[in-house]
Amino acid sequence: MKKSIIFLINGLGIEKPGSYSIDLDQLMPQLGRVKETSYFTTAITSSLEYKDAYQRFFLGETYKYELEFVHNNVMNQNILTNPTYQQFGESIKRQNSKIHIFLEPTNDRVIEEINNLVNTLTIGANQQIFLHLVLSQQTVSEYDNLTQIINYIKFHLHNHMTVGFIMGKEYLPDELTKKETDYLKRLLFYCSCERWTETEKKLQNLRDAKIRPCEVEGFCATNECFISNGDTILFFNTRKNNYDNLITGIYQMAPEVYKTEVTLPIYSLLKLDTKYNIPSFLESIEYTNSLAKTLEKYNKKALIITDQKNINLVNFYANGMNSVNNPNISFILKDDRLYQKEFIEQLINTTPYDLIIFDYHMDVSSNINKLKEGLQKMDPIIGLIADVSENKHSFFITSLYGLKKDIPLADYNSELVTIDYEMQIPIFFFDYTYPKGKFYLAPGETNDILSSALRCVIDDPNLYTLVKQKGLINNLIKAFK
View 1 (spheres, rainbow, N blue to C red):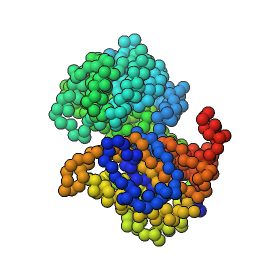
View 2: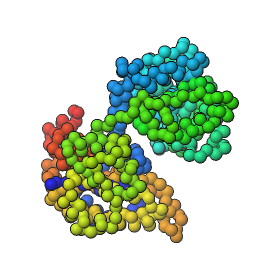
View 3: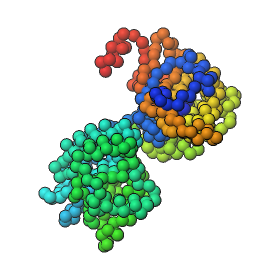
View 4: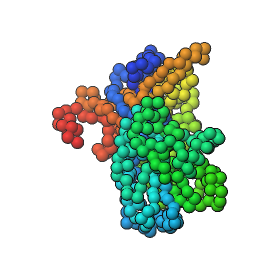
């Protein structure tokens, strides 16, 4: 039975100018040998850490899909019969109360669904609704796109709505210091922090200061957006995010601010990943494009070889943001057996798995020397997999994100050097059923790697693949799609 194998060297990317150079061909002769006979292309990735990278690998860009799901399952004629929506509607009827909607601005089209929600509500002529933006973007380079999104949202807001606070999602640590507590209190309950009505200027200042959006300490876009006792809060989330640091801050500080019994009902669009009992309009989103759903559809099985600490996270994303025990996905831990040819042969040739993913990380090293040692340690396994796969199976060698960090040269040399593999990752691929004279490997995104690997063992043209057939007609079709 033909298998499809993916070997991930997460953190590996295309070396950018100014990056400390690592000679992979010298460090990894087995990888070099495979490269000589493989197809090669690159993929673009905006991820800089493994959590986001896993999500994009297993699910792709989910936001458009999520918004469509929300529109079809919540923001339609059935919303009026939703029990949580009815509770929410009753909650906002308190006299002089405000509505606070927290949102991660990662796509400008989300404002259409928020406006649809507001249009269903019975609100007074002077009732205020504030949209608070929680920035989750990881890199400074994302400020240009973020500015466009925020400007679009501000321009298309429902006439009852105003942008209120803007703050970084990772600004709040698990344990707040007194300084952070005081600042958050001024921001959320008094609006006595920085005020920027022209948010694009503030965002440009943050970019110039090289402050990542997710770490922005917070500022106000108006003086009226403070949270008052009796107000209602809604997290308009399209995924199972965890906002416990923010929720804890609100709950802990509100009694001190109000000095009376606190009434601050909190709701969420999708069930939150939280320790609090937060009612939600929707329990979960079913990601039909997840690895779990694809395997189920075609009656296939996958094996993922990874570290113990990553199993729950990988399982969560592979199952469409659901941590479940899936009979189609199995895990084993990395150990020394992977250096044995007999074990690799048995693992690939005799086990019932159609897709096998080896999950390695190069960015866990504390210095350059140890990073090199880690790469050298991976190399023999790549050679064994290549030997077993030759003329039998598909084999991809790639990464999910490019490492970018300052790192010492060695334990005995604390001089820092910059590793910069951001944005672009390599993809090496070989398969005896795709002769080089007739096929080529197109560039793509990280989710296309998984889809391409599945297409090698699943005969369904609806599965997208980076492996393209050469020829004028095929290229013309591609150009006009």
